[in-house]
Image (cartoon, rainbow, N blue to C red; front, side):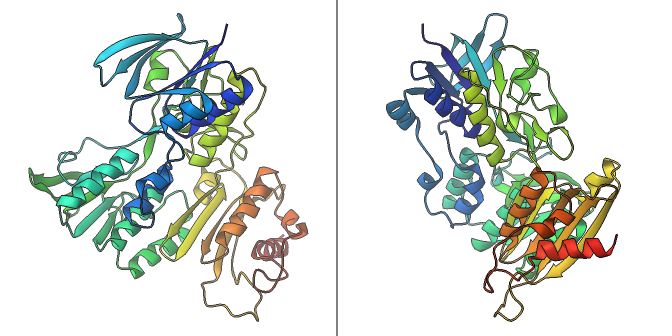
Amino acid sequence: MAKRYVIVGGDAAGMSAASQIRRQDPEGEILVFEKERVISYAQCGLPYWIGGVVAERKKLIARTAEEFYTRYNIDVKLYHEVTQIIPQKKQIRVYRREEKDEITVPYDVLLIGTGSAAIVPPWEGRNLPGVFTLKTMGDAEKLLSWLETHTPNKAVVIGGGYIGLEAAEALHNRGFKVTVLDLAPQLIPTFDSVIAEIAQDVLKRHGVEIHLNEEVVGLEGDEKGVRAVVTKNDSFPADLVIISIGVRPVSELAREAGIELGPRNAILVNERLQTNIPDIFAAGDCATHFHRIKNAPDYVPLGTTANKQGRIAGINMAGGDAKFAGIVGTAIVKVFDRTIARSGLGERECEALGLPYQTVSIKARPISHYYPWEDEVLTIRLHFNKDNRKLLGGQIAGGAGVDKRIDVLATALFHGMTIDDLQALDLAYAPPYNSVWDPLQQAATVAQREK
């Protein structure tokens, strides 16, 4: 008898798992339940669609439900919301949104891939016309549809994280006067303040106003729309607001089913993506992610990790034995004509963990000194353990070349290299692309001098 695989959630982790299950088990029955009307799309591309860099919605969709069915015999049920997991009976309860009824579906193996949701505090005025989040395809569609019938010109972005900065740039490109508010004393608080200040200066140079240490208490407006964002210190005029203060794992179904949760209430999984209940797996933005530097479960929701975890979960659900190797916390974001990136631990994380860390910081030209270059030099910060010289993390800001160096650093961190090991790496060199000593190696040389 064919095994029935049931997947809750049809985005990155869920559909990656479904695809792997089909490869491992050609005869198995695969059911995917998705409460929205679209699956398998690039959430990270939404700000670029809003800003006009991506011209069409369809370019963000990898495959439709119909394509999954006709090509892979994966049955995706759209507008089907799972309301309960009943492990004792190996069943789920599903609300069919179009039929307005509820059904019970049995499973042999279950994957929870419910993802994450935008955090929206209970501010008065949060539901006013012109107030949006930018987490899902539906969010972006609502925003663009609203812009078709409204002509706002003052936009406030609440939150200075990755999506907040990308949203600010997108709205600026559409001609808005943009203001970014953040509760923290710096933008992108996962970065060291030195790197965050570079991003802040870039935004200001492009005409984006930045207001830090601003605690939002509510939004003002009426049935016609939002008029202002009110903080403890001030009031900021706005006829468009994007709330982007972070995300939380959607783990309520798991918790109610008795599944153990981990950091930030994400679903706790082992290296095979199994939960504490037999035959129930979890992956993606709703699950924990083992951090190789911290040597502990963490919660760092990113599309790359969701796809990897979904693939591994799918292999194991179908009887394989794959293991998730973990993350080192690598991230990169474009801020107008500059790039900032990080991997491993930042300064505050090193301090919070009580690590005996040392920091080396340099500025370096990313190519040979004699080759024409008009872009900004790279600012590089590396953190390493004073006792054993092991790399702990690093951050880079600048123009061209940031992405190359952060990936080299991520690889070094993944394999537990020391800061001195960087000097031995055989990296590509030609005058238009690098100097004979890569900027990372230059930083390592400085670290050796400071022994």
